[in-house]
Image (cartoon, rainbow, N blue to C red; front, side, top):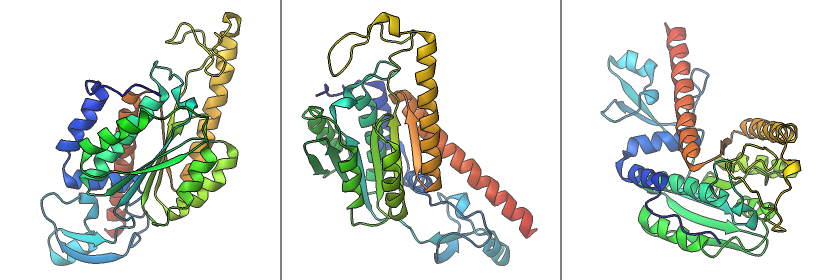
Length: 313
């Protein structure tokens, strides 16, 4: 088990602040981008229209239909069919492997749980029904979260205090996700970078065909790098200290190169399936990566709109 993260933790305080200060249009835009609800690159593409109305304060500029606006002489917003339901599933690897250290000397499970807190804050702000799922080699626990964000934090803290006693079982976790019948509901899976193997890619592809999928991959400490934040590294299974002669720059570089290649391959496969990968090394970098993902998607959407305007003219 891991100690419950203190409410004085700066990242946790930032997430709690976000849960109260973010406006509903901002939350919808953020989750919509991550779920893949962005305008198509082709003119006339995108989701089915539900209706069209005049632009109002608080509406997203990306939803303006420029053809209709030109005909009406004022900005018009198209309301598109939402391709996800009002349910969100937050799945976390609860195996003992999640007690490993990150390059910034954080516990991997702490970073993963903070990522779930961030997504829970957004989903609950959108009034989604949130379910928390924790899985290891012995059990899979589904915990419905009733109430607001404070209630979710309390539920998560209590659940995590009883986990991380058995080895992980990613196959069972992905199998549970595949059995979620609520098609198009958002699924967030949090684990470390060593968990997803080539044999799991096909399951992820199938899952991405029916659900918006976000995979949070937490980086673990490179045990062979000589300049780590942790001076003495201990093997998590045997309890033995890693010999100093193994911690050499050459060996550390080989491990780093191998992990980098694996992450690039995983990101490529997830991108092909329309899923999102957040590869983070700390709670702080998790927030930074989340902001960067939204900013990049927003800029891409804006460039598409500019190209469409140029074509119309």
